[in-house]
Image 1 (cartoon, one colour):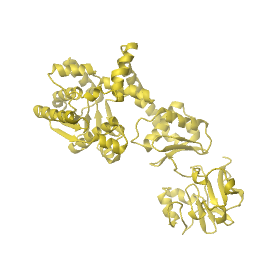
Image 2: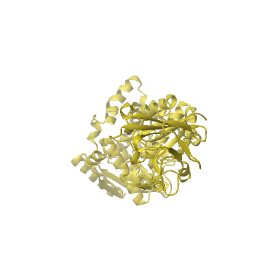
Image 3: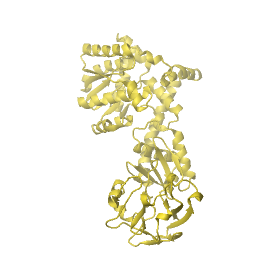
Image 4: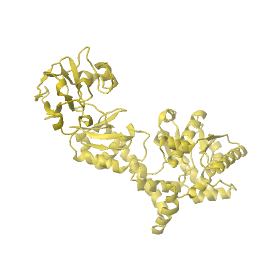
Length: 495
């Protein structure tokens, strides 16, 4: 058996390029069968591949004296085998509480953060962990039951970039710049063969009793669901692994198509928002629509894991059937909102004039109050109406339409004028408390320099009442004392 396991691991290493000559390799060792098997094998292979090993063991602060014994065992074994070893302790329960995470997820993050930090310190580019073929089966099932797409159903990969682990903060950025990789050399070796290898080599791995605790989701899959599925198909583990391999290959194809489509469908992508061309997004096949939305979510919320298919499909229904102003809620505070010709994915409350929205040129436009006027482009119309506050439908404070504004009618004087910015413009932005130059506000709102001159300003006398699509002036905002309300609305009426 030992020879067969070694052959499988060598084949995985060579097929996926998991070891690079001259590289440093950080190996996560818990003391259990998987990590001991991997350590023993890599010690034999390291001279052949010209890599230097460094062991890392994380004490999670969960299992008391048993965890202490695990750390002592790994340190002693590494001394006997002549491998440098670093042991670090993290209070995972406290980390989980602070960050609102389940213990399993907090432990995962702590473990990878430790290994990444150790690799950066050692100048290593590769991290190896002991996930085996049965871990892969459990992972695929977990993702299936949670409603994952192809990215989840393909399971764990033999080699992955560290940024795919969603560690967040500057550690992930440093790991990415350093080119750190996470590798899984045992991914094609079953748990039974791993344990058999340890027995043949005379090793006595530590046993983590928490692996029997079926309050943990993964353990319930391992001890309840998979044995039940084997009563339907004794080969279900092999079937699930083969399915993961097939979907991984399909995922590569989809990613290739996605890269070619992204630039055609996405009008702009910044750290604040992804703006899709609505017509082009609607023209894509459903599978590609899902991928385009997932990619947008991951770019804006890189640390987010397990994006639910339910959320993505809710957003797709809005894309397919919604009118301008329709919105779908997505995880991590994101929202997809439709304009007339685009869909904007951003944090809820994010405001911007659509790329195809109303713009102004050098000339001013007098806006009737009440009444309406066409903008010079012939596509957009601005309209105003006056209502008693009691007759107004909806709460002005809850307005999220960037092309609608509610103003205090008694604070306004005719005529209203729509124009572009001028030297010396200033306002008192609602919610910011105080006077601010228009230029500074536009910079703070991250309005691109090239667009600032064409942003419409609704002006009353010499005062800016509304930076259209962005901010009201507090002097004209509706308050509890407001008796009459002016509604200002932009409408697109043609191409």
